[in-house]
Length: 174
Image 1: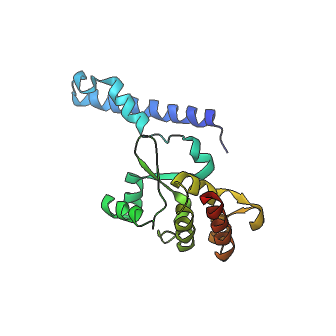
Image 2 (image 1 turned 45 degrees about the horizontal axis):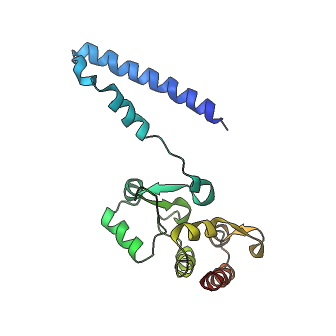
């Protein structure tokens, strides 16, 4: 596995080559320099495409953003919003108002694992989305040090993590 510094170097090398090629082609085509006048805006747009890191990534991620999820699922933004409203998609809101969706909730058939929806709904009765997502990804000693996500997506029955979730919900509600 490459280090972050190695990945940065590889990316910079590729970007340098591709940007240089673009400028060579632009010169050959007679493109005016003004086309590339706002270099800072171009650089900002390029950086915006890079994955970002959020403190919750290690605890509950990785995540899709709304644009990525709608593209991957082939559905509309409205469809995703509706699924959030009825708690059939696990979603957490960032400080800037953007929704993110843990990738681990989805099956290979691009559906949300039904047992995760069951656990999500139970937990949401007493906790905010971030607490619930972290709970789902945290190893539980009662599950043999597996997280609830790993437990149910590994084909084990939902009853054991659901009992744990309900016990925590009851404790949180006191």
